[in-house]
Image (tube, rainbow, N blue to C red):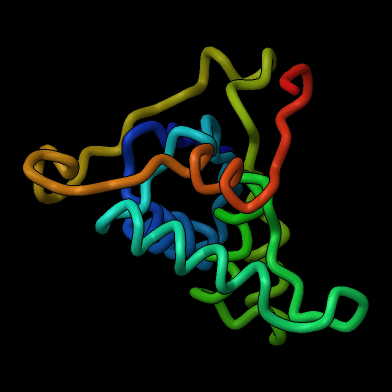
Length: 143
């Protein structure tokens, strides 16, 4: 069974920990609207943290950090599973992330109830697409 999870207005760490648990349990997971996920914290601090991650290292040798929002979620998820072991490799391959909602997954999108109710109430946050644009991502069609 494939689970399609909407990342809109979900805190990236909490979202990826839930997705990691589902993937390790053997389910196929599709995360849509990756660009609408949020990172909690003060805007300047969050942007500087991601800029530091991206600027670190030599370009041809790494470490390499993604710019696209869907790839950032996938990279965050990778840190939550044992991706070097067979069980982790299988779980990691069962997760796909998308920008927006693909046409063939529109009917299957489900909302996962958060344990704490409204996660963004009274909280500072930055949307993932804003972070991605800050570190150099240019969405198709925008210049």
